[in-house]
Amino acid sequence: MYILGDIGNTETKVFLVSSNNKIIKKIIFLSKDINEIRLNKFFIKLNIDYKQIKKILFCSVVPKSFNLIKKFIYKKTKVKCYEVKNLNLKSLIKIKVNYKQVGSDRITNAISLVNNKDNCIILDFGTATTFDVLIKDAYVGGIIAPGIKLSLNTLSDKASLIPKIDLKLIKNVIGKNTISAVRSGFFWGYAGLIDNIINLIKKETRKSFKVIITGGFSNLFDKSIQTKVSHNKDITINGLIKISKLIK
Image (cartoon, rainbow, N blue to C red):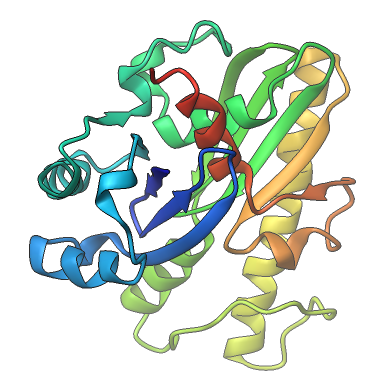
């Protein structure tokens, strides 16, 4: 069995995966909650027989959290815990940008979908809203826009008359009160941002793309933008499974 995980700025996801690449169990917890005591509580939910663990791999954008998890798991398994960017990924993908400047989560997503025939744009609604561009077997770069939830929280924190707001699917553009006005601004504002950035990528590259969306707010926008997209919630774990084959 394998332990595979994704440590993000907001959430950490840990998967117990069989040697034939089937997800057995999954846990999600806040990255800010990571410490040894809490990790014990979280990992109990996976009900792991640590003697059966053969491979451990994480993609992480939070080095401190990765180091805590790495030490915790090693105590349990005595198996080396790898981070995606510590592996030689050249056999899986061509990286045509500064490797150090691309988050391992974005590289993992790219490896999940890269092939020799399709051009892809991966749109991930995470702490940041990211667009990653694949042209056939190469990662050629991307765009990082403000994350929706982070932007919503910042607005309510800085503007005393604007309450905390959950973003929802809406039909009307013109808001009738503060809450509906903010919802409209964020919902239709991000819809416009998404379509515009994708169109600019197409214009700049002079290529057509498959657009795949994932992450927290992806379900709100898959039918609300002009661009035709496909929804895939398992991009990251599929990428981790693919990369784990490099570990001998």
